[in-house]
Image (cartoon, rainbow, N blue to C red):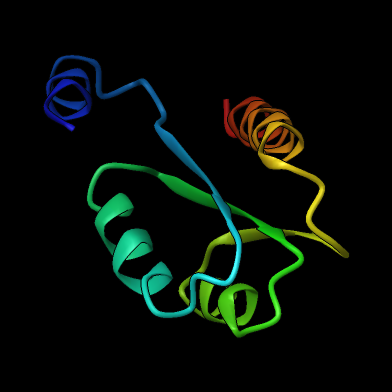
Amino acid sequence: MQMVKLLCKRRPDVKVVAAIPALNEEKSIVKVIIGALRYAHKVIVVDEGSQDMTAEMAERLGALVIRHERNMGKGTALKDCFEAATFVVARHR
């Protein structure tokens, strides 16, 4: 996080996106998103087929949520995180 803080101070034109893969994280997702929003302009959560309220809680906090019907693996979740982050950054230039 220190690097992100430094980058934000030196380059205010740089947009920071936090992309988070999550599976059944309703107990911790709120804290993670609130922490990420201290540094990021946008938070993306890829919900990996959670059976709890992970996606709903993330949406209530303003995160962009991508939902997978089932757990497709961390690699797929990360790929979707990067694709969504690229889209969000390109859209806000």
